Image (cartoon, rainbow, N blue to C red; front, side):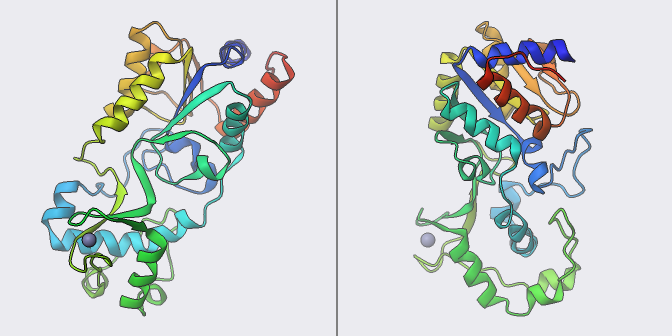
Length: 281
Ligand SMILES: [Zn+2]
């Protein structure tokens, strides 16, 4: 373990790092990683773009659950791991952060340059007029349309992913776009079955190809959306370091893997790099 942390430290101290972060970095902020440290799938099948746009009942169920889950995300604060990444970025060692997370916590921790691969949950887009509005504004309108809803489901699970009885879903009233008045609104995040905007992917590939190393933080690399950057780095001979609790699907491509809590490893890493001394545990 100490040996792998030494390798990690020297890679990061060399600068030119691109970070690829996933759900595991935000679990210590109270945001659930639905795949979990052991890679166990979440209880509910994630909403697909096709179901969201094509099935009014699925859309109603999504908004009813999301109306509750949003409170968890909106109330979350960055943790020591996010702050360590921001510190490394401000020190000029990390060039770019690519995140698969939609919680905005890298920015909240002070990271100056973040590519949000899968979008942001705090923004809402209209599928008709294309206008982008804030989730806060939508939340206000959803509350107005559903004045009794929160009170009746006060027992929200810690993971924010509540099981709602059908009659409560049926009673929930989603709202349309507040700008064009009739458009279907959707969180500005990439759903399963939806592709990441090509220009955004291109920016990520460009950053990875210019990197001296790729540092994966808290992602099991289960989906190709993130794993492709690891594969590209490995093909170009760019060293890949992975810090994650549990194995990942990128381990075969990695120069070094550290299996430990990110909130512990990253602040130590940042401190040791800053002090110019090897990391010890
Ligand atoms: Zn609209």
